[in-house]
Length: 402
Image 1 (tube, rainbow, N blue to C red):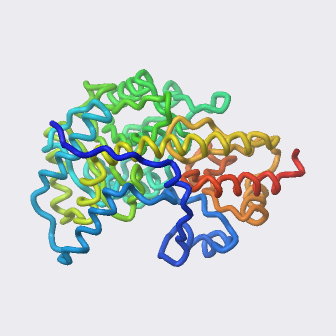
Image 2 (image 1 turned 45 degrees about the vertical axis):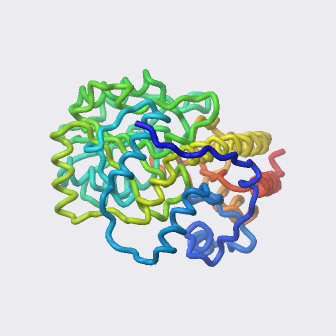
Image 3 (image 1 turned 90 degrees about the vertical axis):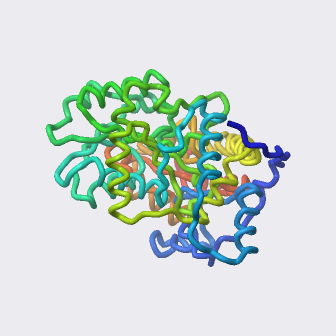
């Protein structure tokens, strides 16, 4: 399957543009003072996981085409949209996806909630490898299910699996495991052997495995992400894959995501819940995703990751120069995970320095579950000048440690 698109030259300087987001109903900037006490006029928003960059021109052109047409009705005939997904997965991830396996949800938090609803019952338990993306626990608990926090092992600043310890935590009511691959907030790209071990864990305990791979395109040079169906093809009878354009191309507001289920029996169960909930696709999201999954989109992502690699190096060098602070080496994502444990300060004191003194809003580590208490998560997907400013502010706020 091929889709012909011209491949443009993407200038790295496009990511240096400072785009004013204050007063645009932007959660990241317009809610930071209300929630964290840091004014947008003087502070730096480094919490919500969206980027400060415009998406590739092909996405903007798709939206402009909709606006020029001027009629915003129901979306039909999704063949082109499904073909774009299949082309992207084949060309970027070496994974051939049948069209009938693809469901469209209102983003992947909605996709997660739909999986919990489809494959578990109230009172069941769901396994999370913590610390991990905070929305997982939120939707699990809101659905009346229990969370089993299986902690990752922090091995000299790199997260590792601890499956032998996790085996002891499984209860008779445990029905599902949600995997974050690549990992948010630790930035790990799980190896094929690690993914195989996770799959074996789920087989051993008869768990549905939901693999959230929303960050699978945001992998740094020298790293390789393996999609779970390729790492463990024998678990497709219990596997649900989740992918999206939204994180990759900074179009989270389009609220579109893909739940991909290869097994017909699992697919039927999920389809029944989708039908019962009356869920249908957002046409804006489908037009944007179709445009993004193209050769132009691929060129943009490659340029993006080169730019983010520069931001990552600059941030890590500056933060790791502060005694007691350690930024976990990122293999994927644009979310720096900084450990403050060796400062000897409690989390309240650290947060006060970051928010009050440095005027930076970062995600509090405790919200990511067990193991995250001494951390803060910083979003590096911003013009380099902002990252430089943030590093200078942090060094000043912790100057007494140097």
